[in-house]
Image (tube, rainbow, N blue to C red; front, side):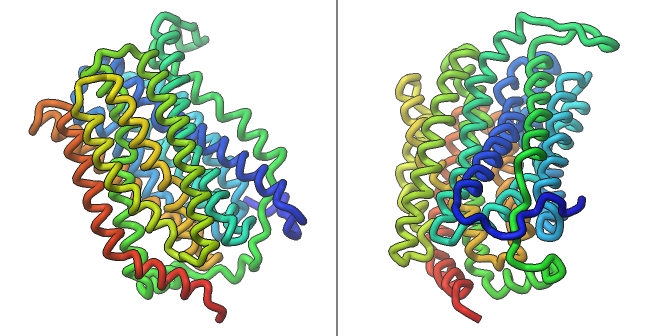
Length: 438
């Protein structure tokens, strides 16, 4: 990939920078739509292939996560050295085609393969996007900018639930004929149509997004050994962020990955009802949480609180534990939805703060790789290990999904609180040291 379409100097204002953030947010929305739509379609997929919760956990978790996390490291290195826009476009086309291909497979093995290819494509996005955002904004505005981008998680999840519920109902009674393939309908048609949405977005990125100035020559980008040495020198801070935020992500993904199955089995809701409910909860409550988290964190940072992201997240944890625990165990559907909305709002405050913290702990020339390493850890935990443990507990321990969800959520949030409290001062000291001149 060459370095064409690179800005030669920063824009005089932030208008174009915010346009780039919105464009990247739209890309992130689509990536999450492609990533979690399969969880809404889990019940018809389960019925067609006769799958258990453990296998569903693999599909929504490790089937996607393994390649997403492992390839994040080389793609993070590429983000530090090459044209980040072109890297994002390449990944967008790849994961869109893989999502569409999910609708054409003939067995569980094919589903796992397509999920792996979705992970390969999406591994390009966040390291490159977060690196270019950090190059466009000063530190005191970075929290909101990254939170705006990170809101793509909840907006994408909300769209996957709301739009996905509608398209799932339509696709269940619709069939189209593909030349050379034959008729296709139900969940397969939903995956095919959603996957193809990425192609026009890739064209828009190529046409309107310029590469950000890095503030340093590519030849000055240090080797991986320098990043590892930086992380070792700030081991307590990085361990706090990776471990504490990683445990938070386990609980934060549960409403999107297992919420549809919970509402279908324990509360008897139909696909459109689930889509509407979770679309509002994940999309609106989550979006509000992400933006408010970024704004409050930036305000705290302007008052001199260097470790504002960690402290803000800590304040939300007691109520998160109670909200999610009640949502998974209570029988009244209305109460469950209210508690889910509150829990998603609070957990989504982490959305932009995790990336902001990693950027603040890392020199500018290493941010792509640092973010890739962070994503490797937290995605393995949140989308890999978490869903798999839920499935195993549901199948082999509790024989009930609600108890498995409540157990995993409560344990992970409690661990997060302990880790973040223990390491909050280490994070503060490392951020201050990174800001110090020389």
